[in-house]
Image 1 (cartoon, helix red, strand yellow):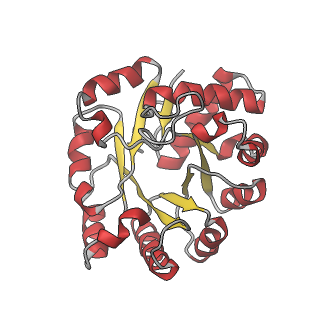
Image 2 (cartoon, rainbow, N blue to C red):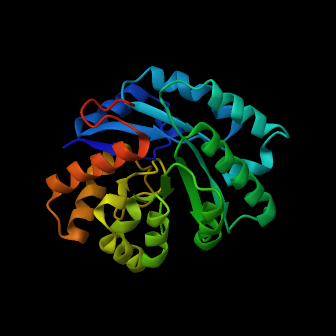
Image 3 (cartoon, rainbow, N blue to C red):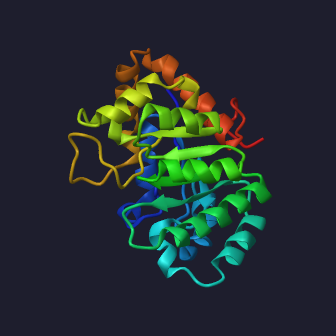
Length: 262
């Protein structure tokens, strides 16, 4: 089975010791592609170089709300320039969004959100969204700025919220959360959604799976997420994996046969 990790921070320090070996470990269990989300300005120039060194790695460019307070005053222009000169491995704008846990003023977060939604519309790219306790606010802005699809990363919310995102063209990122029995609301939502709405992710080295708490997450854990999803939805794992690959290809504009952007 071939799988795509639609959200993996593969440039983080947890993988620096031997990134090639980490990627081989993931490939050995069927992970043939992963997308590295952009989170801060300093990272943007390095991502194209990293992905050029390893077949199957792609990236997105964006400013995460956690790094917004450290951003330069002209970060929007810098991001726009980076997107305008990005190569074919750049598949999205993100990771950006809203986070209720931050002390940063909501209006500051929303201004950054709107700016990046506009860039996604300008460059006709999908988005990778971070929405922590802010689904309803996020939906309001997505209705106002209709982007070319995307994914709500690390979704944790109700079935109604997930269905509304899907109706607006946003896929739902399914990761380690569904491996925790206590995450009942999210598990029920994921089980009830159309299978076309779902894509796999690990968020490695973050978001460890149940039973692996306290350990760095890894893209090689993606098959465990797939197994948990198949059990939750009572679907055949092979059939589900094939559909999820179609979904992620549609999301990022890849050819289904060759795994390359059209």
